[in-house]
Length: 71
Image (cartoon, rainbow, N blue to C red; front, side, top):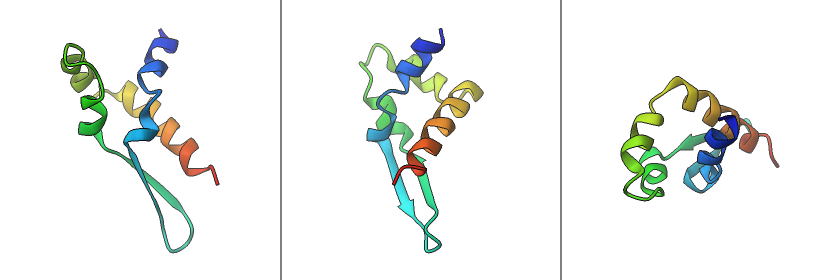
């Protein structure tokens, strides 16, 4: 199940904006609508609900954090 859920987040980077702050900290934001629209229309109702779950928040925060730590 974990593999499946992580596969849903595989293309997260394509739907992320990363901003570099004046103190060189990186902050990444997920464009949820863009992310949801990237799925086939038959899957979008599920994805819309999924992105509002705590599980997705933890998975996406972890993934976004790894993007912020890359240089």
